[in-house]
Amino acid sequence: MLKPNIALLKPAPLRTCARCGTRFHALGREYSCPECRKPAAVSEPVKYAPLSFREQQIVALICEAKSNKQIAFELCLAEGTVKEYLYRIFRKLEVTNRTELALRSAGEFLPRSARPAEAPRYLESTG
Image 1: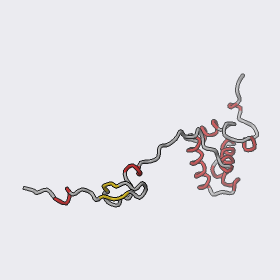
Image 2 (image 1 turned 45 degrees about the horizontal axis):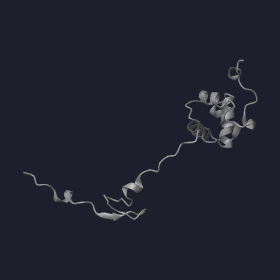
Image 3 (image 1 turned 135 degrees about the vertical axis):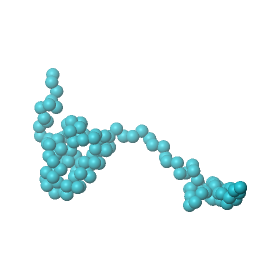
Image 4 (image 1 turned 90 degrees about the vertical axis):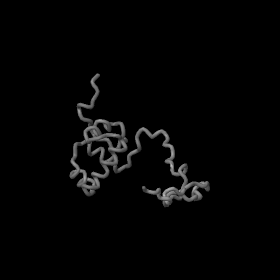
């Protein structure tokens, strides 16, 4: 017959929370109580995060159907840097590909100075 391990039945030692000062039972290397470890409540997210000037330039070049290599050459960036900018832009604007980005950005996210000179015909409204 097996005997229960007495070491497993001991309560966890009491510690004082480093943030709020309350006493709590800690397991391992915990220094804050469970209440302080909870993530802060997230407020209502902004509809779209604003794009930086460089991101706006990249969106404008995407609207001109430029490839990553062409964008990198034109803006004097590495191709990997362009990919990283695109990843950030996709996250900020909640799009999944370049086509969706070009369609949604045709005047909605870009300031007038960064917009392409002429919008493609399929984006013009038919009256």
